[in-house]
Amino acid sequence: MATSLTTSYVGEYKDKMIASALLSGKTLDNGGLTVYPNVAYKEVIKKIALGNDLMVGASCDYTDAGTVTITERVLEVKEFQINKTECKTTFSQDWTSAQMGYSVPNYVLPKSYADFISQQYIAKIAANVETMIWQGAAGANAFDGFTTTWAANASSLAGGAVVTGTTLTAANIVDEIGKVVDNVSANTSSLLDKEDLHIYLSNHAFQMYTRSLGGFGAAGLGAAGFDNKGNNQDLGNALLFDGIKIFRAPGLPTNDMVAAQKSNLFFGCGIEGDLSDIKLIDTGDTLGDQNVRFVARFKAGIQTGLLEEVTYYT
Image 1: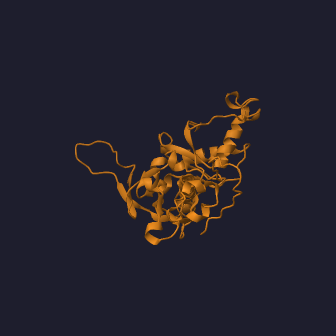
Image 2: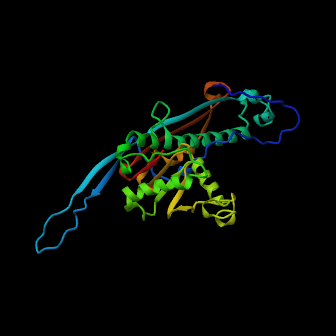
Image 3: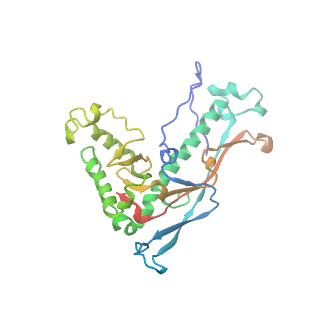
């Protein structure tokens, strides 16, 4: 695909480029999942469950008791790539042309553009992976994300079903997050004291919760809300709900929430650095053209360890 360049090419160039905002890859960047690197294709995750009959009253004899059930979950990764060609002569009548040199056969891609667009490609990978992690649907360009697999296996989730949700607002968000916690308490109460248990909120849910803390007389928070800060709440990374850590996951669908342990949610990849590695290949010397190729290749995939320990609100 060609690069479309629109330029006035008048006045002075301030060597500044901007781009459209992209979804941030906070789920991986902020350690929201357990990362399995060096997955060639499939990785087996062992599930070990101990029965409640393991501990019995003592006697003089050795009596074997209790059950241990070992099953498997398979973490499978899919390969992805970015292949993008830029023609150097496209920039010969642009502000950045002075960075190309003056010998046409030896043109180089303007460094300011090459550096900037490389970072944009890396950001685009992060944005796409963030979305796929949570709501991808398997196909040529995606793998099944968590919400897709949970919806397809709803009867295996905590409580035997998804928690039925609604459109989240500042007025109802506290009650709706409460439904998530109530489902954890009712069906997987052993998780409540686990350090890595999180409530994962979409951007919208996080925003509504922030707004609810603004209060203005609602829910007993007072006229200026929690800590008298109104809507100027600094939630940071230490926010709790009923003692459970809140995690902001931009890739979650708008009105979705999840309660799960980080150690139960897996992200598989090849080499972790591949997700932020862009190669620039100038083909002028080998093909005699004026092109530069941008190449990225990486692997990615997700898996849930124990479905029965996931509460999914949608």
